[in-house]
Image 1 (tube, rainbow, N blue to C red):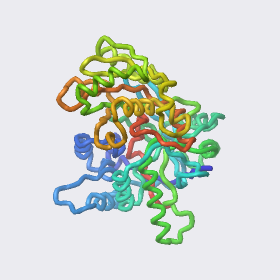
Image 2 (image 1 turned 135 degrees about the vertical axis):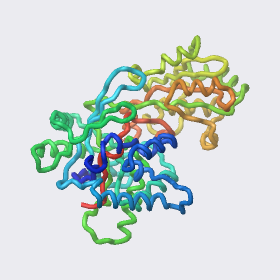
Image 3 (image 1 turned 90 degrees about the vertical axis):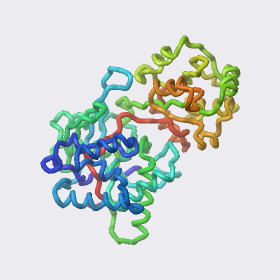
Length: 440
């Protein structure tokens, strides 16, 4: 079973670093160039300087990672970052508006150290997606230079008894240690709870519930696999340290049974089909789908605007071309003979159905996807705009509903992995609230 431990985190001291709102940042993998520049200008101690260090003119290879390591050391020396005196867990609540709606939602979880396990039979840690080498190499170089986890892996656990959520809500009824709001209007509150303080029994309940069964990685597969590589390197060096901190990774753990989590869909844009390819798809779509024509793009925008109104997993897709659009509903019986190998959870996913249809009707296979024939966006309007612009190679847009959390866990439990860009958990855990040093 998974082992989750309390730890002593590094945290920003507002008396030295300034307003904590100015030092937090999104995870490195969702920061574009413009946002990166804004964050660098926002505060000379913004966490982006160590989580996604800038590359400067004249840098030698890997200078940015070495600079991040030196900066982290200086921040610890001058008090910008302080290490908590006592080990504990960190209860974390996010309050946000569900994208595309005015409905507020909160989710609560906790940060702890998870003992690393190699994926495979008997492992209590289950992945659901494939990883790419370039992001892992980037995270590895940063971890070697800093010896910390700057951003967490996000894990899902199932607590049917509800003891962990009850315990976390009792903690969250007290004043938080940190209360910040990010650029997307998401409120982040954090409580540092020691294993020997007034909430000791709640800490025990939370850790016991989260470690009772397997944990599915929701976000941060690259960070997790990088942490295993780093662990193995440290072991090879034979430091002789019993139970080293490098055997663990920072994880945000969320219960999936007693609260609703938000997963955003990632829409697909098919490129370089040309008018003949679009015509072929339109003429053959009825082989796999029930096709309901729409009166215009506004109808599609309304139908797919809010994830709050769609449970997902129903085989529904929006189609937009320069010839018009439709709502497609998969005829699952017609898909069976074309679906890829795998367990039933993988084979019933909306993203699997769409990938199968694109391969069958458009010849968009893995090689075509690797060559850039598919583009991705979270925005319904952006997906439709790509097609309407007509000068960028975009020929068709497919709008998707979100993937249900239960289906993600089911795919992982079957030992399968999902197609690329299948999930996007929202909101992201903000970077800069806590940092996990690989030391006790």
